[in-house]
Image (cartoon, rainbow, N blue to C red; front, side, top):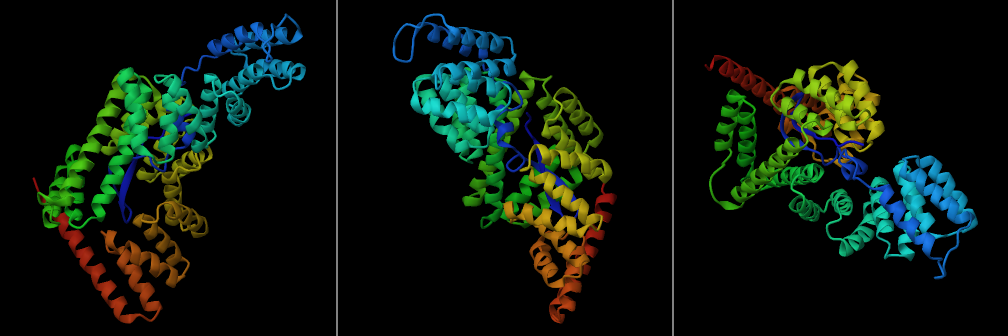
Length: 479
């Protein structure tokens, strides 16, 4: 199980300026739920609890005498306590043939399925028990946790809230419920629950990790809101400038601060207030991540976070080393694979990037950054038939991703599908920093007989190219 903490990018053409961390689309629900660590579900505790119950009581209220069912139940509980989950499953199943529907055996069987990572069977077994016996806290817990692992967040809410009504500080229940709300994009509720856990257990690293993810998503959404507000463009540039400054890129930061002033980043007004909200949320996210790392510095998630920080500062070699360490500590986690794939992608080492990105998608099909990067590689390799379906899939989830529209336009352009290309390139024209988008757009428009528009696009391409050259000269001549 893993947690992806991958930097989002403002991609302008083929440039990649990372300034916010994004996990919204790069998380599988099961990974958020676990946050990379066991929830310390104590099988021994649950098993012994129901062992005591079954030895004392029959479902009808009578006293249970030692019999074959009891022997099997106790044997299965012993296997569970020893971590021999598959053996325990077989013995509980044998016990249930003697007493079909026995809730105590079904409950423990659900626990064993969960511990054996057969989450669907755990959910299917536990949910009817909880429905019939809502007083059984363990059944509520397993139902909720298994629902989260099965990507059924809505099914997790009721049992976990019922559990927490009776046991408000149940750590497993709090973490699972927060994960479910996070998956449902009910971020304020998820934050409230994670904060309850961090208040009760200030050194709970996993709760801090989840809280950091929530603040991160909130900051990302706040920045999007800011960019779309009247007067928000300048403040968005200021956010970018502040990131570049923190990353040590003083020349680009100075330029971005200048663009922020030109864009109207002034005090007062709704845009200014939204800017303060976005900054505050980003600061809270960073503080929560740092708290997590201070508590669990040797965890694989800490290496992923440190890899992300290294990427922010352009130190790709250190970033790659951290991601590789995370992969060694927790083999098969999609976070480190995506991190490595992204570093290789940024380095232009596509042969190494592709296997990492494909494996990421095997583990987490919702990892949209992996989808985008694979599509971008396919466009650069002129594998348009591979790129187009990936880009359409990505844009279905993120229709405002202008870099993806640019890549889709390039793919159509290479296939000489000029009408389709023009539509996509026009959408992406605003992010054209090198003039190539406008140039390709001018070619498409001319092919379509739209001569005046083609001339305008070509002129704009030349202006952008000249401006880019002037900017590069200015940056290189500055002390």
